[in-house]
Amino acid sequence: MSPEKQELIELLEEVNRMLNERVKRNAKEAPLQEVIKRSVQKKVTLPEIAKISGAKYSTVANYASKAGWTRNGRMTLLSEFQATIIIEAMKQGAKANHSNNLLSSIEGVETSQSRVLRLQILNKQMQEIYNAEIDDLRAENKGLIAENEELKAENKQIEDKAEMLAETLDESKLWFSVKRIMELNKELGEIPWKPLKDLSKKMGYEIKKAYDANYGLVNLYHRDVWESLYYAVVFREEDMYIPNSIPIFGGQY
Image (cartoon, rainbow, N blue to C red):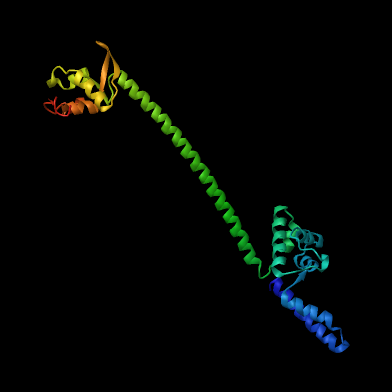
């Protein structure tokens, strides 16, 4: 039998005893009404909680005081849920402080609200853990995003440096010298530089420079300029099988 049911039985027995005493001794009505009222409302005092739980009165009073429930001292009446809160709090305190004597006396003390309260506490703890994990994941994700942005910036710098080096060595994939195009498109013969220069200016492309072992610095023209002046011009050795690049001067230029 649970302590709560046992307490209710004891209260009913007390009512019956007082009814019998009233008949026999014509007892005063006030104490009887107070017991009946408390049995219906399930109100308990701090000393009664101490008796039920096996805890010291000072321990119970301390927990009740922290909750602001001790206005009337020993005569303070608490609801079942308030009593349950104090009992469950003492259980947690006993576990945390390794108070084995208190824990052994209070561990089995239950009310009809105990399970509901523990579920509420567990739900709150799980929510706190969940929120903490979400915060950790957000912080980790934020760090990864920042790290990713740094890596992108580093990669961009590396790519820019690689492109600058390629341009310097006339190995760029976007900028080509006359010499390099002639080597890949031998059928074109001599390629005049002036149309390339004029069209570069017209299309808004700068003319870059590259070092050549034979000629020193040579001009580099953008791929779009080459494609605008020459049909099917080859830019890579693996594409050299494409036949007959055809000059189209006077076409788009």
